[in-house]
Image (cartoon, one colour):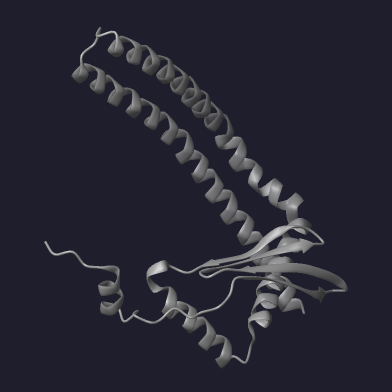
Length: 212
């Protein structure tokens, strides 16, 4: 089977575009929303743009990282879109940061309602999550002890290579399954809580927009 280089893939996908050259830099900026001065900073590197709000609170406002294999074409496309819309890079930073600021302020205003709406999910799954976490910690501790015992036995020629590797594999699988059970439920809860939070924020913003 012949191998295909990164350059070959880029050419097939019509992504063989030279990388735009620009310097890495930090761009502080500020704007006003409802008499509040919002301060932020955009950290621009060769393939990533990250914007943080620094005042009146500190949050991540935007994180854009282009795929490496299509970096050139996506960076050029972004510049074309900004030029088409008559916006500068700074205009785009302010627009995205303003949206992040408004969403976070809306979240802070809605936090009591969001917490109340999320409470049934936490009550339903909280005990099970703690149980799975305890199981994982117990399994991890037991596996660590047994691995240590096995290494000593193997070094002392009390167990052969094959049974040694076989039991290590079993122990690894046991720890993985316990960790996966906990992390999978934890992730499921996070997704559900996050979706509920975003839905309530979106609804509030829609209401504000319609009432404006």
